[in-house]
Image (tube, rainbow, N blue to C red):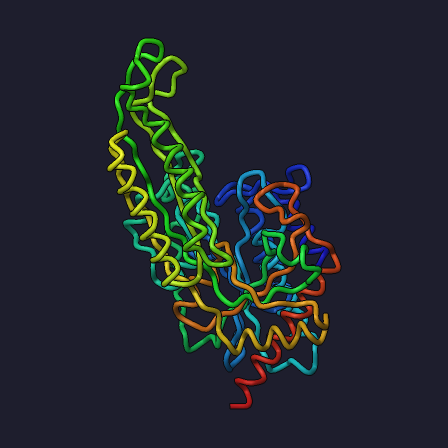
Length: 403
């Protein structure tokens, strides 16, 4: 498993990480390599019309889907996504080699574009029927501007059907991932049993002031959009803790001043803002406080402030029986070194969970680092995570067979 994981990291290595954006040449080469690995363990490999790679079995009976995404963020880490894909390959291989698991079928999968180079969760959303041809036609690479349809054509996938989930085929989906935070490491724990995947609510906040000369405009009459933006950020920092939950997080991800020149009072400003939580009531309470702060900013008269909703996702709960199976396996392999926890990042599991039962497992991230080429996890923790997920998968399939 470690050998395969390191081999996947060679498509396209960058320092100690990888640079493998969706539909880049290294990404396509890695997907063909994965298809070969699936074939090598007796599965029928298939790359569908959006780049998903499946290892399908002709064996009868219910099957368990295990995987994650195989592309990376730009100049990022070698484990984000790749870990779960290679776990799927290794567990499928181990089950085929084990006399005790001969009747249990694992189908590994590598989803396409979870990292949203073209459009969010392209592969897993396509699999559940949530991506239209119109969305594919409208999507383009956020870095290069290449249209998604053109990237699919260059990949040789035009005319290839897009796979669609058959809920009767699968009893569920399992995904493993690095935590991408430091909660496990800071607590001295080795396995996170994911209870839920948080919702992300995103906004654009714009400020309309008066652009003027920075040297001649008296401070008393200025309508500085930049100052209004900073004032709102300060109010958010001051007020949000009163309505936030223990795992609520919020981020001002981008600030733009117009015109952004040193000798001009900015007449316009914009900030992109998001918050995350897995409690719908908490999300609504945070949004209500944000609206109150925007209204108060408007009443101050400094600038006109507008709040625009960009996106609101729904929290996704992981299956309780899958959680129990992962937790029991974790206790067997790492007694008292595991914890139930929500995921603060989005994952393909939240998409697949809309159609079949889903579960997730986390292993620690060294220093809590992810989306950077220094991202890493101890080999011992990588191996432990695979052992735990394999045992959980066996129990889940045994329970279904016994019904």
